[in-house]
Image (cartoon, rainbow over all chains, first blue to last red):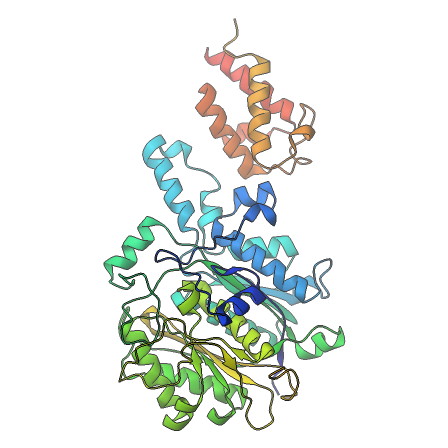
Length: 410
Length: 84
């Protein structure tokens, strides 16, 4: 029998502010963190959290990771001391691109001042594993420690890999998640060249007027622990990662397989892994990028995996409507938002969704937040999807803490 | 007339090291890089600053021998004198 994997801490730094609760509360109250076509973490001042040395030696994507990890670990009650043998604690983080700001700054140095002036800190700052190295060093995590790269599904792949690590017995606890900070002129130009970004700068997933995604920056982190270990130390239990499914489209570099087949398969695998049926699911946190192709393919995939009736019954909303697309951090931030949704029993809306697309006919939670209705007496359960460029499809099943009567509609 | 004075180099080196993180009040000629938590990557940065400022080229082997802030200052001054 598989070991159960509990969530004991969560953290986030997003365009809505610093903190996992801040993310969910502001999203649920309808606040949009996107300004002028970008989701910038405007409230994030690294000097409030990090030393001069840390700030100087870490690209912003690693700074965001470190602060979100600090929040998650504090919630799990780990701030002073690791409650495990450090070699039994893993760290698996994702980034889509890595330290892009450092790359660009050092390229300027190369061109303006010559190769001898390029910083020795360049590669240690922009390598994609820089964030995982920073978190591991700060908290002395010495088990399986690595970065995960799968574009906009990376955050979810990291969480899934962490779950498997604990289930297999390679670790008793894992800090996992993702971070991204790629809001540079070069990255904007690159995504614009692909016609992936919204020319209007508005993220409105599933709406008929959707015209591309809005890029954002931030980090999301989760502390996962083997159930027996977490319970033995009396850890706070926020929920459980109950299922993980992952497939690839093998179809096109950027466009999703329009028939949604491989994405649907990831959802089916995650449900089977959790031992749940579509009727057990109370909420879906969509990948929902606001691109014409993704939102159509995701809708098809949900119907295919869950059946038409169940897909239409379950509320679906997208965090990207409020913070934009955080690329390699997106799946992790969305898992964090899903945990908060199940904990608070409040489903935040898909902001900006006003004009239905006739082809997209699910319940996308328009307008305002609503209460999570938990069906048939089980702990609340949700699906969190990530469907990246190339067709990296990941689906996580997250369950909350019962009983279903506790804390609802209070 | 030396190329640069010991005083000039000392104040520039301490300013550079302070920007790397340690408390400026704790940086003296006798401080070791270990106690200031200055590692090999920081020393390469320091070498680049020194090269930019005084035209003194310090290689990895030069830097490896350095234990204290005073060692670094003396090395820069002697090289600058040699090249002057």
